[in-house]
Length: 303
Image (cartoon, rainbow, N blue to C red):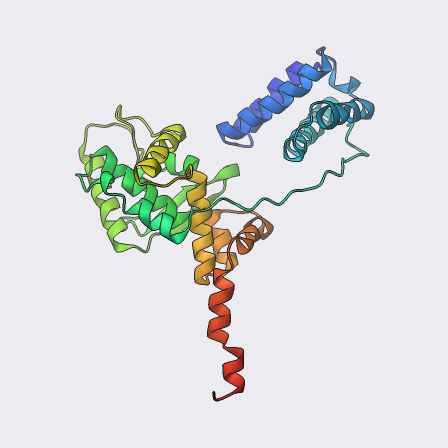
């Protein structure tokens, strides 16, 4: 099978069978498109050899000077692609006896401080309008993301029926078709969500989405990003704030408060606790508070 045809089949598999997000499928498509461009011809998948992969690696690292993160991502995509394509079409997998040993850079997540988060949530320009007021609804969006740490794509996919009647429990449809449950403990936020749901059910909007745009369609991630950027600017925050920063902030604040990392892992929907452990390096606040409570010297002396 030709490489281009196999790519189309692989992307369809990722979207329909693996149920990957549209963003993930687009990222796979971009990585495979770069390799196809480097090949300079639509060759058969069985003609891609280990030597070809090593030349591609040399081109990305040596000639184009791409970052290690980009190179790692593209090879992860190619491994998944060739594993499936070669199994289905009975041809040798060029990755069978080789896996490039690229260093894994551990990046600390960008978070808001407690002060920045509080200032963002209390920004007066959001207002306290009625449940159908867009600024008031976006205030609920920001609060919900900080309270639950959900991804922006997960937030946009929320349906009215995903929340319990008292809005204390929310069912989140996560990556890789993995659902999870988050709990909303703030009484004021639960009350506002109840009012929003009641308004949605009584409106003429046919969509069952919890958060909708001005046309009544499901809110899109890009809309959340742009509104959040404007909100941060109006609140006087110098940094560029993104929805994923709110997710990182939620995890960091929980760990600083002393919540068990395994609970944070469940809340965020991480399949591996190693992914969650990065938040333990973001701040020393939890360590400082724990040491103060332990008071080692105080327990040894009556001073």
